[in-house]
Length: 306
Ligand SMILES: NC(=O)c1ccc[n+]([C@@H]2O[C@H](COP(=O)([O-])OP(=O)(O)OC[C@H]3O[C@@H](n4cnc5c(N)ncnc54)[C@H](OP(=O)(O)O)[C@@H]3O)[C@@H](O)[C@H]2O)c1
Image: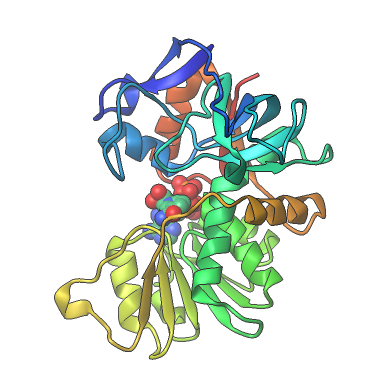
């Protein structure tokens, strides 16, 4: 089978699509024939540095997929051969950028026929991140939130989930994506190139930080006492920037089947939209990963595998 693999860390251009042996499921594993995969920034972070722990090379990239169950180990009960499923792999066990991938039951949700392949592929990691970030923050109806990077893979799902929770949503993007923010239901779209987003920070109860660095530092300075900043990029304030009166949460997304099932249900009910930036065949995986690395993706970049 084909697999987009990292052989050495340090360069996205070194990722190659190789022919490798087909995997065989362990008793608790599910073998999924991939139809579409999706890219996430963690793919280029792994290619560049290994990212989050010791990884054995060569390794296959890809944390998101939709496909069909091809085989199951004897301990698997929640899915059967022939089921259409989407999945987020464990953070240390990617591998969806391939014809076949192994997963466990906690990685998977069944996908109804009316949800198209690219949509189901783009949903898992970014959707779970957004859901888990809001859950960690404990956002409630009537609160106001600010999402930095509101049209990004995580951001465009986060703004919609915040609206579904009854929050008032502020979100930033470059000028060309302001209409998309509006279309996604954002109450206050902010062009971060024209208006310093910190002008709005004093109005919100929760900030979702997808940028870190200077953006997060300036945000933290302007936050009201008693508010919460959830960083998905590990933002650590410098010693002189620490605020005792603002809660900072750093999180790493986890695959959780029940939450993925909830997200799939919202998409099937047309209450949550996955925006597709573009679709690239597996053979051109590197081109798509370089494009994601450039940092201005709106929605999700999909890899067509089958
Ligand atoms: N901790 C976790 O569990 C977790 C999970 C998922 C993702 N992440 C991390 O979170 C980050 C975002 O992920 P993603 O999938 O959303 O990335 P993405 O799809 O590449 O999104 C990037 C977005 O950032 C926006 N952007 C660029 N510069 C900006 C700025 N100065 N201010 C505000 N927005 C800006 C871009 O909007 P414009 O094009 O309009 O500029 C673009 O839409 C990545 O670093 C990723 O690794 C962490």
